[in-house]
Image: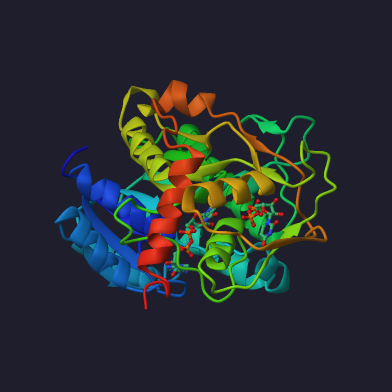
Length: 349
Ligand code: NAD
Ligand code: UDP
């Protein structure tokens, strides 16, 4: 609803900052809460520059119930987009408690504060990692779930907690029931076309796209392609890369749907946000070289533990029920990544 105030947790992060741009542009008021554990405040200044609008920022941890309650008391929040959380798979295997505490417990505290403030519309950042072993590489929302690492399990646990919350409202005949969209992201890449905001990973990137672009700009010497003996068309891993701006547009559509006829009596529903198309690691390298004119120095290395050969989204449900589909292609994703990288070779520093 235009003019409504949206609380964005994790709003200084990569995806959250792009969501703030879309929300402000669409006429929403925005309140950001972030503990800056993996981000800086600079993106807020820049997104205000992009939109010509201002937002309210609270530096706080979502596990701090008192701080959240104060925010809900002070601001006329109508709905929440919940991005805050830790997201590195490898780190989650080394520090599982930290992931469960931040992601699962943090979401529980947020949900408690929301329920107490009677704010029960929530758009949640889930992930394609919640899908279990499957016979098809094109994931559909009703496929069996089952994550294989603590990060993925934290997302799956949150999904289940949120489903339980919604089911409890149905049992209790709640007057204003929970309305929840679980958005399962595939592989978000790219940046806002202005090049003012983008992904600013700490240290050496874990993910393919920031790694490739740091090799292309000369910050890193060489990309290691994690395996070329997978049962895929060129032997390298295949993923569904989605432009971050398309992704956050999906959040606005989900928010609108929560406020529409479909969720009138409440509910909790999962939607894939992907393009429906898979690209291999070698496709990414080739496209990067073609679009930027830079050489990407790479070698074929061993497989990375825990990687699946191939998966991509079936994104039909989001189209049917949210009226959303990804519009940008791989060339756009690469061009915007490169624009951000060239304008900000040291990130937000
Ligand atoms: P990010 O790290 O850039 O943003 C997350 C933000 O949350 C950061 O600004 C961080 O400081 C903040 N944060 C973390 N714990 C917090 C806490 N306890 N209290 C307050 N703030 C906290 O990550 P991102 O890529 O923007 O991801 C956003 C969300 O999307 C995450 O929940 C992530 O798991 C999910 N997701 C991301 C991807 C991806 O590839 N980037 C894929 C699937 C799902
Ligand atoms: N990958 C790679 N080298 C890297 C990082 C990633 O070959 O330095 C591959 C990885 O094996 C996977 C794809 O790139 O097939 C995407 O990996 P990423 O970590 O970006 O996302 P994930 O699929 O793990 O969510």
